[in-house]
Amino acid sequence: VQLQASGGGLVQAGGSLRLSCAASGFTLGDYAITWFRQAPGKEREGLACTSTSGDSTYYQESVKGRFTISRDNARNTVYLQMNSLEPEDMAVYYCAVPFHNGTPLRFCVLDPGVAEVSWHYWGQGTQVTVSS
View 1 (tube, helix red, strand yellow):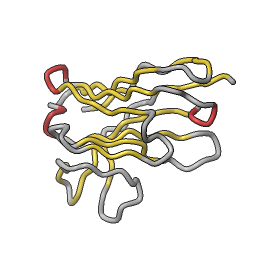
View 2 (cartoon, rainbow, N blue to C red):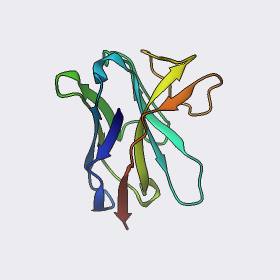
View 3 (cartoon, rainbow, N blue to C red):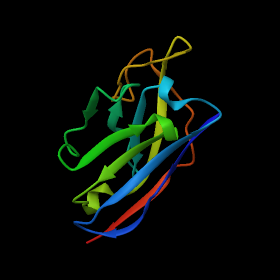
View 4 (cartoon, rainbow, N blue to C red):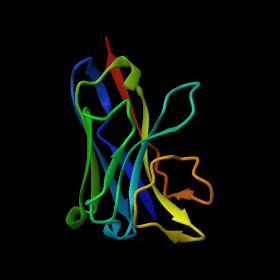
């Protein structure tokens, strides 16, 4: 049971990438999903999240208007479309599922530090490099 992030790569500033978060071993449509990133020497930060249906989405201020989270439950995949990339976006990107008391949450959680929320099904992440 795992999520696997993919789609990263090297892009010039101002360019775009679309990341995929694919589930294996479970039905992604039953879970809310959050995209995170972590740059060297920095804390992991939540970027975008989606509820199980995709009707509710939230974004960190620094990516609002540039990143779009979407999901295709039929393909068991959540996407992160990233436009107008900046060197500051360079990091390893991950996706994960929020849990509370051992139960996966169906609603969106953006902040990785929310009390009583644990994060599961981390994959290896995908590297995004933005050249200036």
